[in-house]
Amino acid sequence: MFWKVKDKLFDLTERPLIMGILNVTPDSFSDGGEHLAITSAVDHALRMEDQGADIIDIGGESTRPGAIPVSLDDEKARVLPVIEKLAGRLKACISIDTTKSKVAAAALDLGAHIINDISALTFDPAMLELAAKRACGWVIMHIKGTPENMQQNPSYDDVVSEVSSFLNHRYQIMVSAGVDPLSVSIDPGIGFGKTYDHNLELITGFDSLRKIGLPICLGVSRKKFLQTLLGRKMDERLAGTLAVLSYSLLHDSAQIFRVHDVIAAKDLVTTIKALQSFTMKRNLVL
Image 1 (cartoon, rainbow, N blue to C red):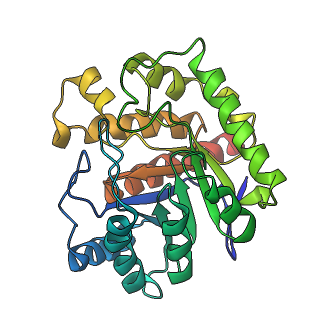
Image 2: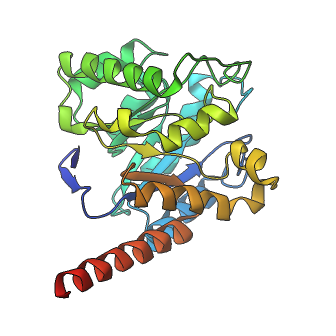
């Protein structure tokens, strides 16, 4: 499986890509306020690249449950100076986490490579027009409702089928508009308008998503369903996060891991891949 990001073509059969999260916000659920200053954000991005991140995903608007939207000007003021300082310094790809076409366009102009849209281009109709005009990578996600109301009793008849159908439909719309099919990846939106059971159904039921034939981005890092599962506070959910990533890697169900803890995720991937390679070599000898 391949993913085209501007002039790069990632071979995702070798290992999952690591997408490091950089929230330039005062109120994100896990690290809000930690990297609001430009210098802090730039330093953290460079640090995550050194730790093994293939992509740095920069967001200026919190999408935690209950989050209130921020203005276009505020979002631009948070993310664009960071992208401007990182462009040309990073070997890793720069991703902009936004639902606003004007933020996305400005970010691409400054050197961003990927647009990560949690609404799958539905919150801002102009985003599809941008997609048709600009060559970049895309991550389109499923969300039920908006961040402000998405956790108010979300319901589905069949969450895996409905999420898969939605993402496939959005993908087909993008391709019909002229988007390169190789440039699109999908994200089931763990925690975005889903109950605890919905999240587990999606994590363990990726077959429908795989049938779409696109790279899958998995974002479970530190999320609330791990608190429900483990009874752990925010800073105690790394083991749970890594367990889900391990499950995904062993079942070949995702090709992009979106994480806060880059070193741990990178080490997990390296270790499991080494064990799989050793097992394969031993079996060939036998």
